[in-house]
Image (tube, rainbow, N blue to C red):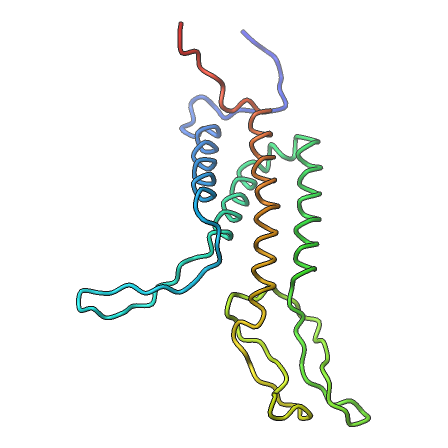
Length: 195
């Protein structure tokens, strides 16, 4: 009988829950989500039986892949907490994600009348990553010296796409790190083909 104590506890043999099987399924799903063309979300049209066009949203495949990697990280949270190298990687990953958000996020601003009577823009302090085709305010070209502004769809799309393209590269690296951790945990022990 082996009484060796390990840093990587396994679930009870009586349990139907197998972390290795769950991780295997998650990794396969993540790999499949990365195996398609990585592009922004867009509207497409399909036709019903009466030949009526129906608008259908095609999701952003970059976001799907990133969400799958986040799911994998959640499943591995206990293992990451016990692994010094993985913890360092996670800290750096969060720093890089935060830096990308700071680099590309939209800073909300409103038109403002200064005490001297001039009209300008003032930051509100709210920041977010706009959705593709989101309407954001710009100076009203017909009335540039008024407090009015107009909303224009998609004016921030270029920056949003840069953000998600760079996030994709970062998440590709993290997916590799997940696989290194899984290898270290020896979740998928090799089987001998010839006995």
